[in-house]
Length: 113
Image (cartoon, rainbow, N blue to C red; front, side, top):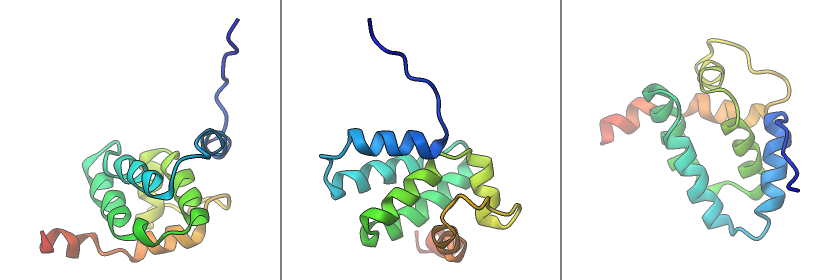
């Protein structure tokens, strides 16, 4: 009889997913995360999170990729509020990644086409 998975926190689910994907290359992981970042729950988040990912993912270390993946597991509207300053980010998220996302100039990327 198969064992049913129970829902855990985003961090627990991401750690579990990371262990299952241990053989995944960094390049494949970056592509997967870029896809997840580009297709959020609403257009503004797609632009902001996806634009940031497109620019930042190529230089991220494995640890930074893990932190970014945890953020992608969070609610879209919460994540968008943390990035735009509409709400403070909780203490259990990576502040360095949030700070980098806040510094990202999505408007410049849109203007550049």
